[in-house]
Image (cartoon, rainbow, N blue to C red; front, side, top):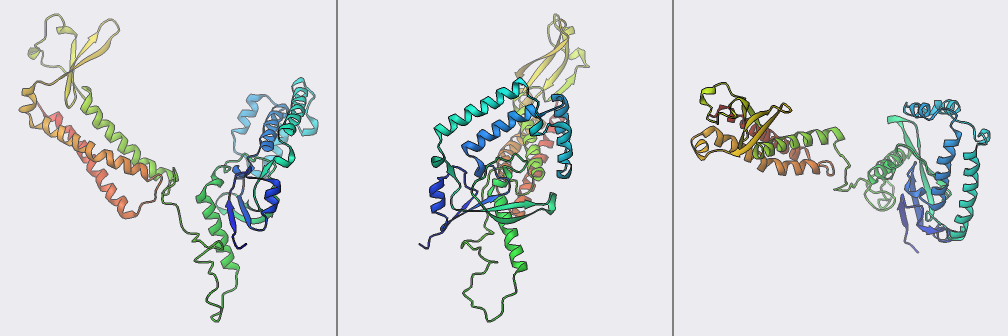
Length: 369
């Protein structure tokens, strides 16, 4: 009898209506704003489909004009005026062939749905429902808790419909509510019972509300830009190393000393330059038929590599950049899902700088013979 259950953003098809009523005394469900998951029920999906098809019948401008109109941001205070300009009122929808077919489709779907899913078998959110309603726009918004009937009869398609289902958002909302409660509550006296539960250290459910999951996919704890910009640079560095190791087009030089050319007389005039990689090189020839450059890659003669320290150095720095770069790139990807400390990020930045220096040293190849 002392067990209490708190369901955070439960699906709208969790228990039957009878069971949802029976567990009112020991189950409390929390629904945040426009969260779409507690509204996912069969009848709501049917209603959403009908309203979408009905919206097509209500449009009184061309589809192109309507598409251009909805692309422009609109404040809530201007939404009613905007809808009057673009849409017919529900009572003024023209009786077109499409609309008549839509009405008959709705009636037939309603009959089929009632037969397949009687009212007594339909599912709902369990227990008492506390709806955390959002007020205000932008950074000044806040949430207020209200008791609500468990019949969420509509799916609200909003920008935050999925965001408000995330556990991080729920923790932030509950923390703000606890802070507002503490600010409005009277200061406890010194003679208060020490055994009272402190809202500051624990929430009313017996757990520390400040605990955060150590891993959450694509949570971006340090922001999207701060997470992705280093990843993009790391990927670019690794791609440059891979290109240098496996292609013969990392560098290119045009032939100016024709006396050193050792090819056959037949293709003498078709050779325009030589392209170089760290392990391969290619002779660039021009195809006169379509005026395109063709580079046939081949390995360097052993004598070239053995006697040239610049080539060896460029290869060593490229390999070092790959050895360090792959683990760093993996750790950078983890920063989109985990919150690391400032010391770890400083060490990571140092290794990124080392990778960049190694990539720059690859240009020692240009000093080779």
